[in-house]
Amino acid sequence: MSSTFRPGKHFTPDEKSKIHELFHAYLEDHDLTVSDYFDLPKRSKGAASEISAQLPGRSRIVISDYIRSHFHPEYAGKGHHHYTAEDDRLILEAAKTRNWKKVRDAISVFPRHIRDRARELRRETTGVWSEAELDKLRAIITGLYPNQPVPLQGLPWGTIARAMKTRSSIQCRLRWGRLTAEPSSWEAAHDREFVQWLSNQGYCDEAEVDFCAASDALRRTPNDLRTRLRTLIRRVPDAARMEFFSLVETLVAEYVTAFDMMVSDVTTESRKAEEE
Image (tube, rainbow, N blue to C red):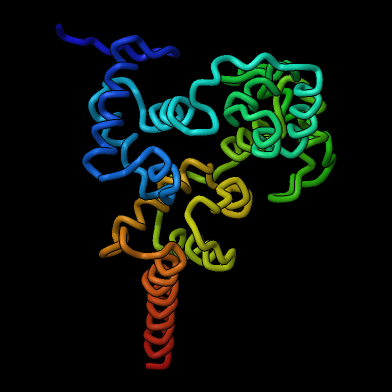
């Protein structure tokens, strides 16, 4: 019997069966137990990518979430969680800092489900922003800085979110970044600025990179920056075998040092031409 996979919110029985089959095959091919798999570094978990390639309409991220919620020892087999008043109190407290892992440790619920519960409790809207919402966001932010330009960084996102009422501080921050971002084309100077910013942060793992902070500093959307980083990494020979810190050092040599030397050479040539 042939299986037809349809994109949508819920997985079909055929999809679930296929995911289970392919995940266990991946573990067998790589001589891993379930616990071994979840102990691997984030970048080494390849099951979601392989499964996604065989399920049209299902992204790697969606497959990865399914694998974690159905196979991870902390979450698998626990079914739908019935939230108590104390659970909701903890979730609303964690929502102030978006620290879902803290609540996960207390009630053993998948972090993404905790986030969704927080949105439900706070009646936050998700999905596409309406024009009315965008106008309200602009009015709130510009109203905080009358008769002066809106600063590039340091906006009070908690205050802005409370004024919006239907969007979280993270949603407001990301949406404002998209509204004010520079064009998405990348030039050598942009790569230099991005790589220099990464080097200054001292990250040891790609998972630690705060693309929201980078968005504030570089006026690019977080997704634009994330995609560009992956593009730069793919250009590094043997990148898969390198630690992230070493990768950044390699990128610095390629995009910062080389760019500065090029600018220096151009400046020197211009001065010689002027003297002649």
